Image 1: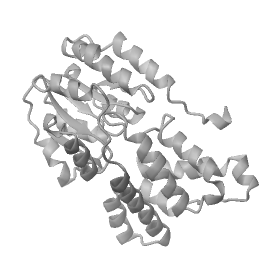
Image 2: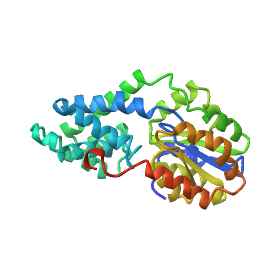
Image 3: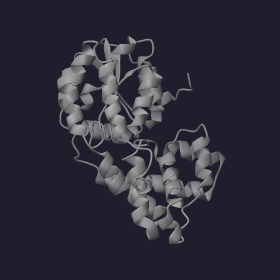
Length: 298
């Protein structure tokens, strides 16, 4: 088992109260926050802090493709940032304008390191590897968080999320499994009075999603009694790494996905009829929605 941060203790200490376990991603899955966070908070700060004003239109397209409309949807902000720069660098319109997106070698080294990909992780890394590029990266990341805190509130959970949580309250142990900072998650789940349904709110400080699931479920539940609900391939990967089942919330069709979960999928899960053909058909539909090739290359 990878080294576990002290922050993750609540997951290790979680003892089953029910036979079933459900992990739920937050951004873009339980809450309709992905669009506002990326379009109004992340992307404008990428353009501002990395001097992409001359190609803002293309920077926006690249950032939205990576973070919202591709198989990388939901990945950590640091690899996503680098991917945006790399997509821009090879785009003819950007080359014609003579704009050279940042290469960010120091940020790439930070991503490859064993430090957590959080602001605290970056600060700890910078203590050993000080560099102006990393300072700029931290400035950008803090600005994103400040914009999120300022901008993102009053966004309710998708319809059928509350109903699903209420229904499962006496049938399954539930936790939030997210790459978002815990402070933001707690604020959102408490603001809408749904924090009471989950036993732990696990964010980026507790490690990666696969680790959240491993610490919370390993040796505690039967394999087909563990389900992860998510809206991104990373959620499915975390489920698979733990031999857990996966329920996809389809990007752009979130409300229908939650209604289907509440009316159909959750009953199949509790009845032991979820694994196999039913799950496979849902995943096939999900994967079609998240391409690997950006629209401007098709």
